Image 1 (cartoon, helix red, strand yellow):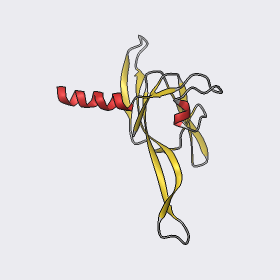
Image 2 (tube, one colour; image 1 turned 135 degrees about the vertical axis):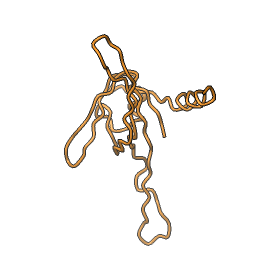
Image 3 (cartoon, rainbow, N blue to C red; image 1 turned 90 degrees about the horizontal axis):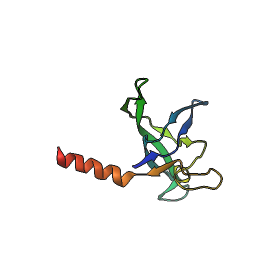
Length: 127
């Protein structure tokens, strides 16, 4: 699983039951992506081969939810989203959204998986 931090306000869009839906993410929010490989058995062969090289499954979002007019915020975890192939600002690849792209300008998010795992382990040790 990969963890990304939003470094530029963006939208996550997806299609469910033929209808487009979406929500906004803001600077400092985090989202969790699992790269899934779908395996199928090829005709006239004994083994399985990957049908899709990578499919991004959005698993959860950890975001700052504004709770009052003074700007106080509360961290909120949205879990078990399970959205397959979400788009960030209409970019279909999470990797493209996290790299500089001349067509889209500055990166939208950055991979913070290692820091997230390290911080989690440090918190466990300190508790």
